[in-house]
Amino acid sequence: MRAAAFVPAARQIRLILGPQRSRILSRDGRGMGISVEKVGYDYWSSARIGKFAFPFFEFSKALSVDAAAQVSNGGVNKAGALVEYERRIGAGELLDGDVRQVRTIKELQRLYDELFENSVRCGLDRYATSEKSGRSRWLWSRFMPQLSYSPVKGLYLYGGVGTGKTMLMDLFYEQLPCSWRKKRIHFHDFMLNVHSRLRKHQGVSDPLEAVALEISDESILLCLDEFMVTDVADALILNRLFRHLFGNGVVLVSTSNRAPDNLYEGGLQRDLFLPFIATLKERCVVHEIGSAVDYRKLTSAEQGFYFIGKDLPGLLEAKFQLLIGKSKAHPQEVEVVMGRTLKIPLGANGCAYFHFEERCDKPLGAADYFGLFKRFHTLALEGVPIFGLHNKTAAYRSCMKTRRGYFVRQREVLLSSSKE
Image (cartoon, rainbow, N blue to C red; front, top):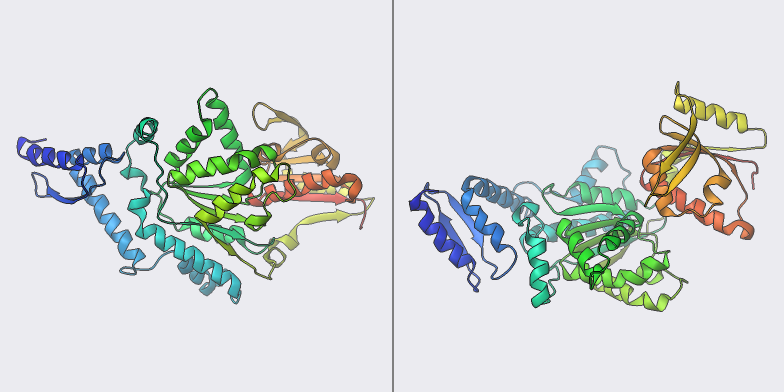
């Protein structure tokens, strides 16, 4: 850096480290305008100091931020879930006339606009933060614990099966800028990740705080699909985990089949889970989709394979062979999670063949099905029984497997010996 440019830069660094709020407009040696917002003693400072070494990069980024602000305010062209929804309606890609779904889209658009208007305060831009920000915040919090809630509340969408929750989340998430600190993940996968991180932080005074800090450093906007609490281990840590996450400024957007008050209904020690429901309702706008249309029945769901009859094993095997093509099926062993493995009777070309008892009568959980679907996109399942009180656990696992597979667009070919 030239000496002429260093003097004003040094003055600005002193201003940035000062305790008062101010708006600084500087010029480097070539007259390049750089806009910097002062936020006092916070973890953004080290990143801002680095701006003076790369004025051209900061100037171009400032232009992109201004352009984004104009888009959000309608100055250039409107963007967001509602705009994309209307475009797809006009192109005939989506059905029109679902008033309740439109109301949900408008809620997502409102959230989109609020996030854009408060993107700087929320710290959404990953390039505006220092690589050491997480460690600096952790060290500073040891001396001065503080909460920093987001100025934007999240959104909790719930509704019955087939009401378009996944499609609505797709519309919202796909319109978000690539530079934002955001993440979309299935709830079960999210909790698996949390437990994995907790094991790495054994011995820390508050491992949940450390995990929450890691997650919030990676993703300020957290989008969770299929929020469904069934495990007591998850239920007992959710309140403390999300209090830390919300305190770190995380914005939650989630879909679920259940209203918040019905989460973990009938679960063990549910009284310890109830504070989480209050926290969730405090930090998120709760919205019921309420659509009466089951969109699964209007699309590819009717093209699936479900064979019924006692003399059809040969047909299922023929379909499986058709799916694997010229590949030769053979027994396989797949690692699912935490070193656990599952034995696959027959597998080839992304397809696996099982008997129902092997997958749903054994003590398997969401993590096992998650690992299975990472390896195979199609499951052929024979021997699906009649469900009742005598095999309700197997029925529950079957539903969990299907829900998990639906989210990752996994296909199933099923064979049952009864029409009941």
